[in-house]
Length: 314
Image (tube, rainbow, N blue to C red; front, side, top):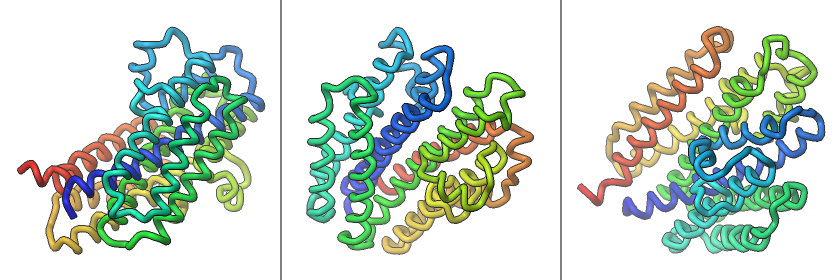
């Protein structure tokens, strides 16, 4: 497989996953506002921008973290490369260049999403957009099913799966960090009713609330951290996502009969997660753990590029 084709498939999948996650975050946040009353509007919407990692871009072009401005920035701002509309446009363009690799059903799902976002681009209030965010989520589930069942599980499929899982791991880590580091005003807030509601919202943003409740009685920072960071079986936990991405990269290497440095980077990160202890993470600081994890994730992303996508430039 040509490196440019592999790169397009990888980023097609990452962009779709990114758009899905942003849609989830906004929809869940809007519902959370109905349950928890903040005194300042900033407290409602600023964390979403921070979760996307785009606070510097937002601050350069917007004066306040109001609902209208944050919703526009994260949903329809074409100058924001991580907005839903930018991600879906980028995913469609990447898909267009590899139409001979992906199935027609996958292309049709992406195309439907592209037209859906343009249809709703004039709306600005989150109340008017909730059905849109749900549709983005459902269409991404449809695309994932199409990819699983209509695409050959060869190199292209593994690149798509690796991209999706690395993006998912990053967003799960960001949501944990925002909740733990930004939304706790005082130590007394821990394990309070508000704290429980907010941790429940974090779980809902990754579609993990029902699965979590079957195992634990109530949402608190210890159990949610254990579940979203170290759980071996939940499809959006950091550990599961990294392990799945690593397996796909290993399978690609076997198919190509090559040895690539990125497998060593994955091995180091998997070892870090395998040896991690939840109490140690919380005692040393969840924010510090997430920082270290995202640093390693960036190393893997750069190593992936050098291992597979930059080959034609050598």
